[in-house]
Amino acid sequence: MRIGRLAARFQSVDAYAKTLDDFSVKTLSGGILTVAAAALIAVLVCYEFAAFRRVDLRAEVVVDSERMEKMHINIDVTFPRAPCMLLGLDVMDASGEQQVSAFRHVAKTRLAADGAAVDAGAGAAAVPPPPATNADGSAYCGSCYGGVPPDGGCCNSCDDVHQAYKRRGWAFSDPDSIEQCVREGYVARMQAQAGEGCRLRGFVAVNKVAGNLQILAGESIKHGDEFMHTSYDYMPRDFDFSHRIHRLSFGDEFAAQSNPLDAVAKTAHAAHAQFQYFAKIVGSEFRYLNGSVLRSNQYSATELVKSDSPTPAPKPARRSPGLFVMFDISPMRVIYTEHSRSLGSFLTSVCAIVGGVFTAASLLDALVFRTERALQKKRELGKLA
Image (tube, rainbow, N blue to C red; front, side):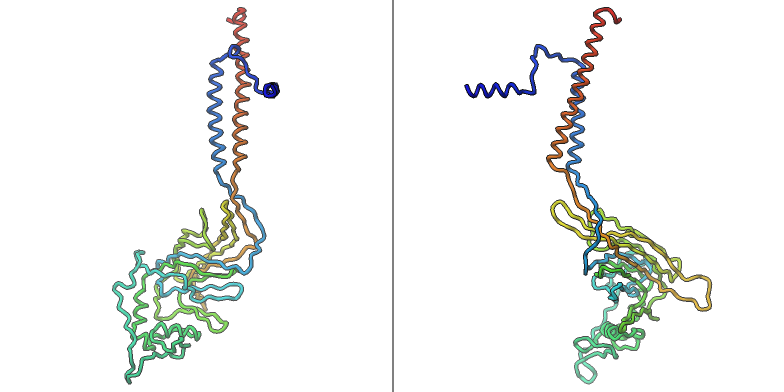
């Protein structure tokens, strides 16, 4: 009895009262509206599902509070008319730090005139090893010719002497006067690269402060606090700094990254053309749905080309040819956060679509049905032909 009374109470609050089959009328217009409503519901639900699966990035700009942060400058540049042995890579920043010949993480690839990579070992004369003993029978220990010797105290190769000169801050201007260089044919090997090109690929780690990266012809020498750049007579003279930037970015790379200087190609119309790029770097942070965080940088860039004037001057100032990237750091950071719709939001939208479409379709069906009934009655009374 109690169960029956409880069921009767639930039955009394039924909001979905059913009509008897004897009083239901099915019409052609109702069928058409039902099919159209079902098709519309299916289309709208598909759109909602696509929106539910889509991940959006929301950007927020904040003051960059990171301190003592390091940054990688990623470079991939081809110089079709500048041989590898001629190129120097230096970095200087606003903190006063200088990196001379910063090739520790940058690889050089020699290129032939047609752009193909040159096999450094093919057709090249082998560098003779240093002699084991001196003429008097004592163990050979090459002189460093006044340069700062390495830990072993001996400069047994031309490169050892070259590095000893760099540590002393001296120019390596006369390798023909150095016994190790003459034995190895150093000058001949350098001049054999005339007419070649070079591709530089790698990265340079720098402080995240304003500075500049320089790719110049010749060698950089640091003597005390002074910084000099020079080229030597034995280096090739027929070159220019025409180039193609395959990639230039700052920091870790991320999906769909767009660097404004990627694929930029320039042709030098003068031997001493100087290409300058000015990059404004903005810190970027990506926070993904899985909780991982990627910190990188984006930048905007402008460019300027300088070259010597063809008109002779009483004292022409020869410009150092090369490629310069001057970079500045923005005090702002852009934070991108991934967002996606919740399951509850998707289900609510689906219910709203189904209910709204069926309600609108039922109202339209009722209007069409009453109009048809009214027209039918008029026909029966002979008021309509």
